[in-house]
Image 1 (cartoon, helix red, strand yellow):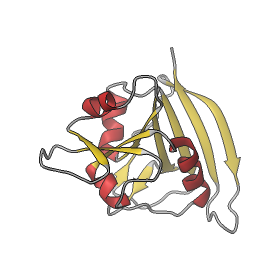
Image 2 (cartoon, one colour):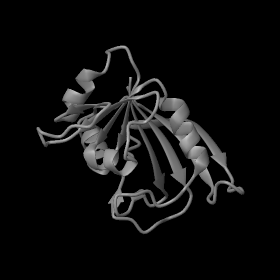
Image 3 (cartoon, helix red, strand yellow):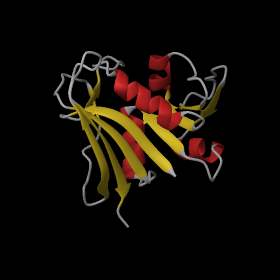
Length: 163
């Protein structure tokens, strides 16, 4: 099972200046719960914005640079080669960035989408591709109001590929 996991704004904004635009602790907690013990695949820029391997996960960094190394991480030169590094029966998460998400969607590499929608529009320089509802079916949604820890209303949505 290959899952894209992402937090996006209502205008599909992902980030700006290689950083997140908002701070949503509930989303970070959900991300940790879903990805713990799993392989997480990401582009080099996403890894460098995080700055270190995430605990209790196997980090696979995708880069075209054949000399790139990071202690505690696996390195692959394509999304397909990154997927081959993960055990066949495991849940694998694609965690970004925008180019990796677009490639995975354009090439039908994902089985599911775990989306956090932040109910706000933001100024951004990277965006998630529009979700094609002819390809993806919403199977679960949980919506939450802003609170003292989470500044914006948000929803957790799971999509599965239509058969």
